[in-house]
Image: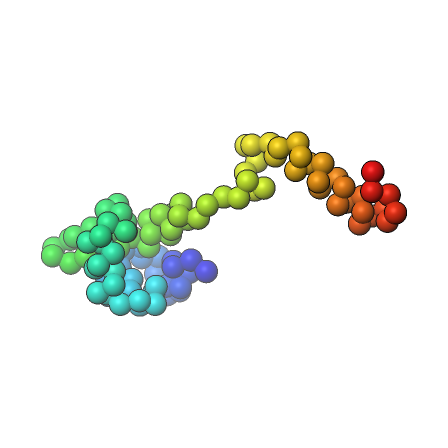
Length: 102
């Protein structure tokens, strides 16, 4: 469930205070403040408006998605090495054709 789905009030508001963002994420405002200070959360996710820190839920979710690595098996732009293909064929033959491993 994304942070935006947790908001769940149907208001369509994307910008929330640091306190509300902390509630949505299950952390404390102080923890978010420290993450901002250490540049763990990038500048484009939050902004200081009239002395208050505001977060964009959409930008936070987009940034969070970039933090996940993509395993090679899911990366369609790269072909797996030939030995991986041979291993998979052998395993499939063993499973579907018992007694034939070649």
